Amino acid sequence: VVMLLADGYDSAIIGYAINPVSQKNVVVYDVERILKILFERDEMSIEQAEEFFNFNIVGSYVGEQTPIYVYKSDRQEIDEIAEMDDDG
Picture 1 (cartoon, one colour):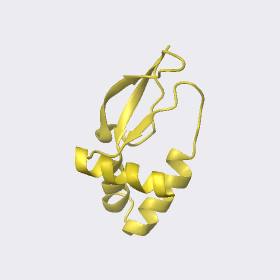
Picture 2 (cartoon, one colour):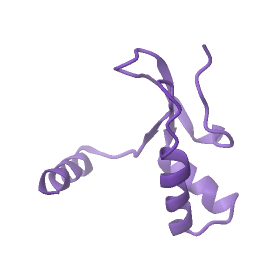
Picture 3 (cartoon, one colour):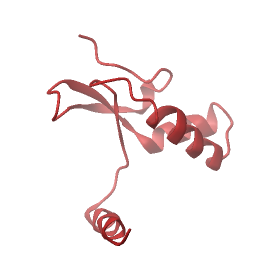
């Protein structure tokens, strides 16, 4: 079985991971790299790129092998995000 790819974003691939539910390998993309592609290649504003990414890329579930999109961050950022989630 071939891992599913997000067409046009090969330069944003940072590796693969194992889906813990299906135990299948899935491609992993760096969100910042995808946004940079949309900004530079497609000449979108940052706001347009983020909206396009959220609706058309992250919003496209295609089954157990849907790619994973990663926001790289450090421990402090993770703690801040977790705190916002708890407050939310």
